[in-house]
Length: 360
Ligand code: NAD
Image (cartoon, rainbow, N blue to C red):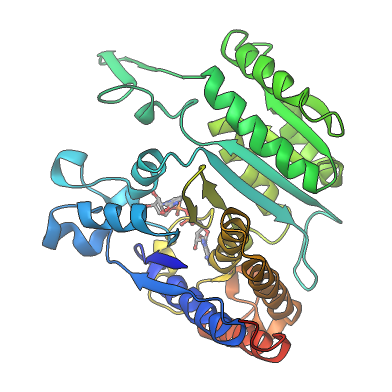
């Protein structure tokens, strides 16, 4: 399996090095056949290539079986004309990664606000309120006058259908419950279309229960009753916000993993950003990127019918959970005094002592 690693900016290189290391240990123990290849991008290539996403890096991502991308400091990037391409948005569009899958669950040893929750937000990734990706050319944001600005929200039947299918397939393997989240009381046309398409797909999954909630009510219910949800399917902006909220209920952004997936490509990417406030201090929590890498291994196992990769995914997630169970490994975001390095060592040690041996 050829996996491209993009180290990103600020804490990106620190947490991607830790993730690469635990993958190497996993590969050594289970003989997964991983080929890990690192490519510089982000601010590291802005001067040398006049771009934060050089063409050859995009080509390498496209050619790989999977990609692990650390967070990038997009807020500090210059305008596109000066090479400041948002790699996250650009790669998602170029590789048609339409599904952003964001699990949130309580884990032993971590301070969880929620008593017990285990849900997945399935967020449409290619349109919605994100006006920068809604037009054939240029941005869908306009400023007709100094004191007025407009943005175009796009909802298409095809995009709703395919994100709904990802959600129902996932729910079918979990607790068979999908909640669709929208704001159709106000956005009657666009969210009306979203509902129409999700309901159509629901007919193909008679064993999965479908219910619906308005996004504002959902934001409140998630706090009151986080254990009531299994799979939440929603459009781009609502999914972005609700998944951060869900993450905050169980350990925070440092544990929030995600996979951006399409039919042919997938990218493991933590939910959090590049945390410039703690960059270079060796205290960033690498757990979210490691858990995202585990999601990628699981996706690759299904796509290439390689069950051993799913064994690797389970072992990696189990080892992250084992490291989290001991508060001595906790980085400051979790209230501890641990370091990125210490956490990676704990995960590696657990992989070493719990692998089932070589399983080529
Ligand atoms: P952020 O997620 O980087 O940081 C928010 C807070 O969470 C900070 O206090 C930070 O220290 C903490 N935090 C985040 N990840 C952590 C980790 N792994 N370990 C410990 N603490 C962690 O959000 P921000 O400050 O709004 O954005 C910083 C930069 O990241 C900006 O340039 C933004 O554009 C970019 N960003 C990138 C992505 C991405 O690459 N996918 C996503 C969001 C934001």
